[in-house]
Length: 280
Ligand SMILES: Nc1ncnc2c1ncn2[C@@H]1O[C@H](COP(=O)(O)OP(=O)(O)OP(=O)(O)O)[C@@H](O)[C@H]1O
Ligand SMILES: [Mg+2]
Image (tube, rainbow, N blue to C red; front, side, top):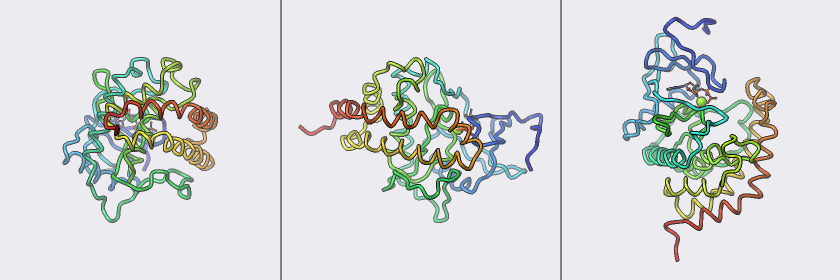
């Protein structure tokens, strides 16, 4: 049952509004159970067993049947990114964090009955991250990155985790954090940013391979095209996604596509020019 008033010891946690009824209770977070919750809890348990502690710890279910996770202390930024979250050192810390996540996730086999999230209206839209190498987060929007001491320190909200590729996950992080967006859609501190430089800073910190550096721009292009399709489909069915669409997604995504078509070669050149492992 959904309560209109949270209990006195429950502090509502409001993200971008995709998931209702998330609350903090002391040093835990309670979230509604969805079909994929048990799969994600198994994944989070694996990450901790593998030594990756920069994610919520899965703590089972409470007396109301809600999912229980550890509360991850720190600050969570929101769009538009504050200027202090736009430096190269933030990209470096995020890239290293995602690299550690990938290395911990590598080798985990999801349970046979694994269930993954399907955002509204998107079931028939093909994924672009085929050829799965691992299960990873896939949704590095600012609201899902916890900062401590001014740097990304942990990841939350693994709702969109599923089998994917390292390069897809990297493309998703760069979409939000380079960002791969038209200048008018960036936070003001990044309007004139050198995006090829920022992508290369991330690539070096992640230690992207030569092949990953070549794959990034074509994959990011397909990812943004898919975002456009999935966002339109979700907006037709769900009021929260409809609000995102009307408030700007419907213009931002085609602008990002056009910008990347123009700027992609410069990003690819910069990424491959600095490849540490490139063959002579
Ligand atoms: N385990 C956690 N530790 C600390 N804070 C959390 C945790 N889970 C959620 N939060 C806080 O609650 C907010 C909303 O949670 P979450 O991101 O899971 O929901 P959401 O509705 O999917 O949000 P969004 O659409 O913004 O991603 C987060 O942005 C964060 O501020
Ligand atoms: Mg979130």
